[in-house]
Image 1 (cartoon, helix red, strand yellow):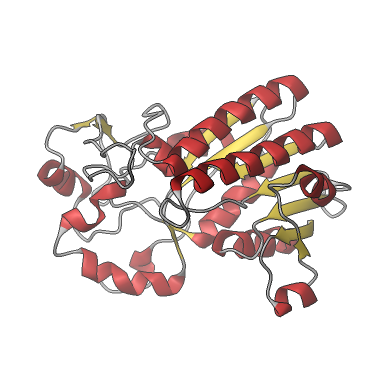
Image 2 (image 1 turned 120 degrees about the horizontal axis):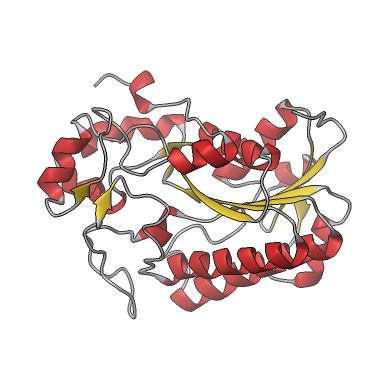
Length: 295
């Protein structure tokens, strides 16, 4: 890897779960980080986090001015936290503003948070909003990047639209874009809940029992910055296993009997394919709940 000590990276959404981990990961690897978010505590302000509302193009431009690249994690992070229209409009506005400002300022790379929801979540669930769509059974598993686009909410639709925006602005500017279709992010304390999922496989079927450790998300952000790529790429970021203590093939057959298993998988292997992330950015998940709690 090239020397990163002089490289300045803006991390948006820097006070969120993934943002804090990404800031820490980048600083530990010699990057200078400009952290920004819209809602700050007093401690955040003392730590030098910049308050910026990225739905405003001028503020997005100022947040990115003087940096080499951006890790853009700021968005409304899930459906149901705001009204459907606000979720879509704010997310698309933030993403367009950051992508366009990055191109206008001549940044060298954009790494950003897309979502696993673009792939059809919630699998096997009813509509989460009206208007919206019910989640269907996956066509096959492990679900990969080609199981797309299947948005069922305005949140997922905002990410599908933003992937299109990223592709076009990357083409205009020749700046590489790496979209991370991130699974359900977990911190260490979240693993304490996992045993409650085991008796009923339907509880976590909505994302094929997927998750990802926040430390692996942070690593994926750094790897996205360091990857030697051109154009716009979107890759699934998930753990190497599921949240369940039963074999993946067994729970898939029980809950989604019509879903074709497209290839052999490890006994507890993920049903969210991470092969492309390995190929494109060198992603290899290091963390699992199995190392933290008994099963």
